[in-house]
Amino acid sequence: MTHSSISSSRPVAFVTGAAQGIGLATAARLARDGFSVVAMDRSAAQLQSAVAKLVEQGLDVTAAVADICKREAVCAVLDAAPRVDAMVCAAGIYNDAKLLELTEDAFRQMLEVNVIGTFIPAQEAARRMKAGGRIVTISSRGALGGTRFAHYVASKAAVIGLTRAMAMELRDAQIAVNSVAPGFTDTPMTRSAPAEMFSAWEKIEPSGKAASPDEIANAIAFLAAPSTSFITGQTLFVDGGKSLGGLGI
Image 1 (cartoon, rainbow, N blue to C red):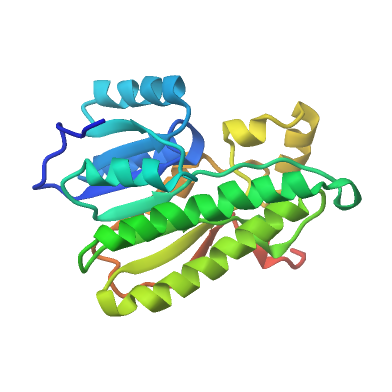
Image 2: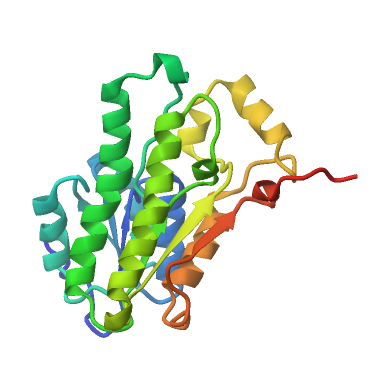
């Protein structure tokens, strides 16, 4: 796999989990912001179809099929590009299970994809970045806690801790590392829940609806921009204010 269409004169951004949802919206947004974007996902047909639609819009996006939990695959994608300026780790999974019914296998899979699948692309990107590089991880408002998804909560809380640790080690290299923590967002992942559950979730949002992936992509693009050089180690909650708690009376 090569990225022969990528110009070394443009900043190059990589987005994992880019076949759908937040990752796809982010790939489109970064391309509109002037990046050459490498959209990464393991779902080949879905990724190639999504990227083809972006290319039809005149956007500079290239598809790269890769499993982000496999270091060799990630390295192959990064090494095929002329430079690495930004890495957005948007790949992730979610499923619900009551605490007392949660299995070790389900817990391990969640940590493997959501934590290791963030660590490997971020680490390999950092190894190839020059000063001014940007890494953006995707956590979740769920990191604050919740019922029926303890393994997801643990994985996203780990992403926040990992983000801070990476930011501390990379600050002398002038590489910024930040996280975006979306609230309830309308994506194929959340739409996989029963319709009545999705509707119930929407009703408890302050706005009465889920965020669009574009809302989350806006925040990611802000943190991926070269102009945000003085922001690092932060987690930005994009959840319509729900994480504030309290009662409005």
